[in-house]
Image 1: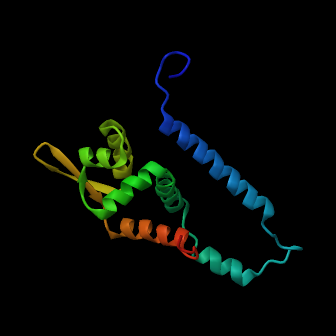
Image 2 (image 1 turned 90 degrees about the horizontal axis):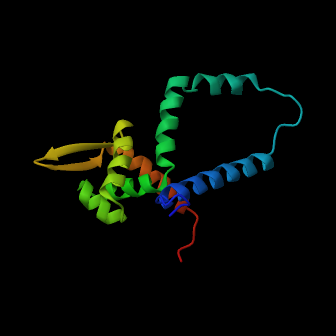
Length: 151
């Protein structure tokens, strides 16, 4: 409980701490990154990079997707749905969260086109929207585990 007697949302606190740590680690990487000496610009390399550059609306949309995936709870939802289609009740049980909290996260994932739902009677089932989402998740897992020795 907080000072006013209200309930403290630990998940929110953990997410805020996680985001600050992420920002701090990015800042530390940026301060140690090597830079060019002098001011030599390779016109061919610049042209090639610009020709493949995504436009601002695409960059914004992709940033929204990556921002949504930057949340550990949402990644756990994606992980569970990577296994199979599940209803909100089942997802809440899997993650040990309230149905309301799970629904809130699913609403965002659905708005971004990462998950889809279908209704069967009074039960709403969720699944990954398509194979691109599954591939994005699995590639991310591969990236963080490659080169690690098994424990």
